[in-house]
Length: 148
Image 1 (cartoon, rainbow, N blue to C red):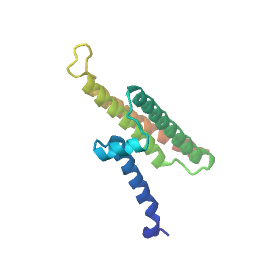
Image 2 (image 1 turned 90 degrees about the vertical axis):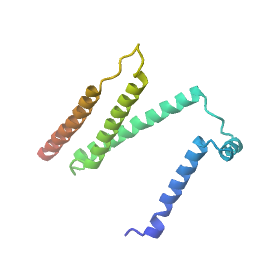
Image 3 (image 1 turned 120 degrees about the vertical axis):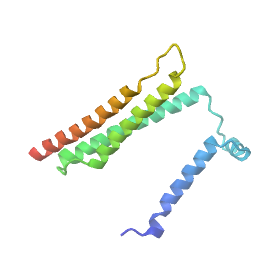
């Protein structure tokens, strides 16, 4: 049984810590700068930001791989069928990544004579292929699990 009074406390603490860390890292106020100096958190230069970006990207791909392996484990080893939530999370992650990359690429190359902007129809086609391919893969895995 889920008790709202006691089970929501860890979520509130996690949300408060997340909000505080975002405020501390991005806050431009004098108080945030003083607190960063007290905690010995220097401002990030371009190299530190690039390293941080690469580590986040690696963690993102590792999370997707673990989620995919979990989905396959549930489907084949435990014979419980395909975990639709895990598959939807993987497909949503790839779709969001593709869409955001296309939008950022378009914004960064718009107005630049050296580069041609990425056409929107290619982005929409790629998202459609990802959605159709994911649905087909889900269907094929479902058939494979049901026949075994």
